[in-house]
Length: 217
Image (tube, rainbow, N blue to C red; front, side):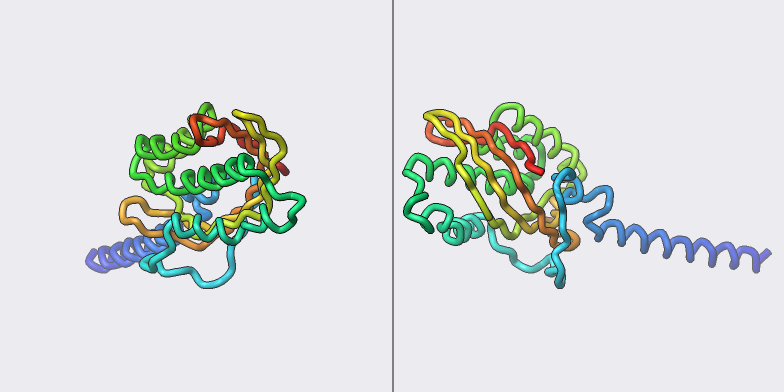
C-alpha cells in the first residue's frame, strides 16, 4: 500500500509539472486564445517581428513621443512635392486623424471600459465608437490591453473633403505587444500589424473625429 501511495504521488507531481508548463506557455504566447493582438484585426495580416523580445521591465517610449516622431518622419507626405502640398485645412484633417489613431491606441491601456469610452470619445464618434467599445470590453474585463511602441504611416491620401466631412485612404503599420493591465507590463513578442483602410471623418467643433473605417483588401 505504501508503494502504491508513493507511485500515485509521483504521477500526480508529474502531471502538475506538465500542466504548469503548458499554462506558462499559453500565457507567454500572444497567439493564444486570450491574446488581444491575435484578434484586434482578424481580417488583416499579422506578421511576427523577428529578433529578441524586449524585457517587460524596459522603459518604452511614450505614445506622445511616438506621435512627435511620426510628425517628423511623415513630413514627406505633405512637403516632398510642391505640386501636392496640402492646404492648411487639409493638413488639419490629416493631423487630427493621426492624433485620433494615437488616442485609439492609448485608450487600450485603460483600466476599465468607462475610462476607455471617455478616452475614445476624443477620437471617434457614432456607431464606430460603440463597436470599438464592445470589442474593448471583452478584453479589458480579462485584464488584457495593448502596448504600441511604433507607428509608421506609409500613405495618407485625402480623397474628398468639405466643410464638415472628409474621406482618407490610409496605409500604416504599427508594432505592439499584449499588455497586462494589472501590473502594467507587456506580454509576449512584438507583432507588426499592417492596416489598409478607407476612413470617414466628421468635424465636431474644431476637431476631426473618425466615424467610419472600411478595410481595403
